[in-house]
Image (cartoon, rainbow over the protein chains, first blue to last red):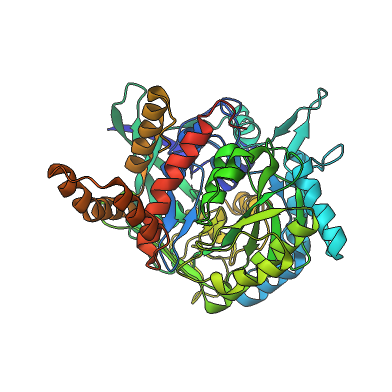
Length: 474
Length: 95
C-alpha cells in the first residue's frame, strides 16, 4: 500500500472542496485533494450532452431517491464536482433564511451580513455576472409570461465570464479554484475513491483510498493527514462518515428541491444551447419557476413523461423547450451506507403539503408558459392531459399524485447540519464533526435546509467562512 | 427503440443503456434486474414456444407505463428514458 502524508486532506473537489483547498493552500498549508471521478477538460464535452453525462455524472446520471414517488437526481462525479455539470446560476442565501437557520440551529457567527461578506469574496474571485446583452428566447419567454400576468421575474446572475469574442465561459472549479489551489502548492489526485477514514482517540488520522490507474488496474493508498475536510457532497459525505463508523446525526436530514417539468411547444423556434437565466420568483420561497436544459434528448424525455402521444411534438422539437417548477420541501430523507455496497441508499419522503405545492407550482408554470405564447404543454405527470388552454390546466391538479408524478432534483443538501444544537446537528457551527477535533465537513451537507434557490453560492460562502475559521484556529 | 435506427446507432444506444444500467447504484440495479426477470418471463416463454405476440406485448408495456404502482411505472420510465435520451442525442442534430 502506498502512503502519502499531508497536513490537510480535502475529500471532494466540488464547490465546497475547491473553496476549502484554495483557501488553505493560499495560506501556505500543505494540501492534498482527492476526487473519486476523473479530471475532464471543461471544454471536452458539450454542456448537458450524453457525452457529458457519461464522463462527468455520478452513475451516468441515473440515480434516484426511493420513496413515493421516487425522485430522480443528478450530481457530478469528476474533478470540480457538480460545478462542472450545473447551469452556473448563482444566488446568495436570502438574509431572512440565514437568520432563521442561525436561530433554529444556534449557528455562531452566521448572520446574513456575515455570509454576504464571504459571498462577495467568491463573486469577486470567480466573476458573477448577468448577460451582457438581451436574453435568449428560451429565457425571454419566462420574462414575457410573467410580465403579462403581473408576476415578478428576475434574471439570475451566473458564475460566468464573457470573453472579448462574446463567448460565455462557466467558471467551474476545474477551471478556476482548483488550478489556483495547485498554483499555491495543492496536489489533486483524481480517480481516487476514499473507502473509509481511519480514527484514533477522537481524531481522524487519515483515509484509506483506492486509486484507479489509467491502465485499468488500481492501487491502495493510505493518506495520513493532520486535518481532514470531507467535501464529497450531500450523499457521499454522510456515506463516507457512516462507513467510517461516525453516525450521530449523520445522513438523516436530507433535503432537496423536488421539481416538476413541462415540455412547452411554441409557434416559433426556441434556442437550445443554454439554460434560461430568468426565474419567476413571484411564489418564492415556496417555489420558483425556471427553465431546464433543452437539448433534443431532454425534450424527448420531458415529452415522454406525460405518457401522451408525443411523436408530432418531438418531430417539431426545435419549437419545444423544457421548463420547471421547484419547491421548497417540508419532507426529508436519509442517506444510509449499506455494508458491502459502494453506493449509499438514498430515500426521500414528500409530505402531503409538498404534493399540494407541486400541483400548485405545476399549474402556475403552465399559466406563465401559456401567457408567454406556448401552444401545447406536456406535464411530467403520467396521464396528465396535454394542455392548450388555461381550462385544461385544472385537470393537472388532481393528476399530480404520488403514483403519477415524475419528479427530479439537482439540489441535495442537509445531511450533516451545522449548529450548536446537538440534538439536530452533525457538526458544530463551523463544520467540525461532533466528537472529532480534526474532522470537518464543508459542502452542501452542512446547509440546515434546502435554500429554495440554487445552492452553489451558499455552499461556497459557507465553505469560505469555515475555511477562514479553521485557519484562525489552527 | 425506434425501428428507424440504423444498426450502428442501434448498437450505440444499446451500449449506452447497458453501461448506464451497469453504473447505477447497486440497490437500483438489483430492482431493475428483478423487474426485468419478472416482467420478461412471459415474453421469453412465448418466444421459446414460438408464440410471440408483439401487439400484446406493446399493450402490456403501455399498461406498465401508466401503472399506478410506482416501481412498475418507474421501471418502464427508466428504460424508456435511457433509450430516448440516447436515440435523440445520437441523432444528427442533438442541440
